[in-house]
Amino acid sequence: KMLYLHSKYNPIREAETWAKDFYEQGKLFILIGLGLGYYAKELLKIMDADDRILVIEPYEKILTTAKDHGLTELLADARVFVCLQENKNSLGQILRILIQQKFLQKGKLFVTPNYDKIANVDSIIVDLKKAFEDYTVDINTKVSLAFDWQRNYFRNMKYAAASCPITAFEKKFTCPAV
Image (cartoon, rainbow, N blue to C red):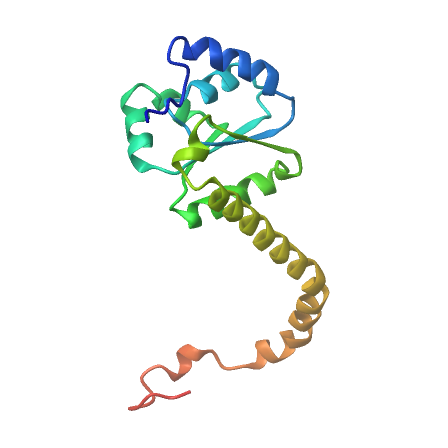
């Protein structure tokens, strides 16, 4: 069975209609599936400078094909972040950037038509949740331990000033030392 990722007859009009209905000012738009970029391009046309798009593409071949069909301008836009699903480190890094820019409190998710039939969308959503949780744990750790770290730093300053640097021991031993 053949599945279309866009309208067979007028994909631009379909994407324009969708973008007008989907758009809300001040959001991070998470699109699962790039296809040939019709949805992302139309959304980008009506977005404010402060909005962002995160595209998670499950297939490298589709991303390469999209680049070959003139999406380099879309992909080069500073408001657009593209990540392959397989590259979980990249997804985590992108999400960290977007969280620091205060975008993830106000995100909106869209699964491009038929991607739920050709890709494991649930896995992508699990990856997104995991990245959010990892960042939340990281922030909570920093906040809860910030006072202790600072206190220990100042308590150890007098010892650090009087200590011998490790470079002083360089070439002093003929065997490994701990």
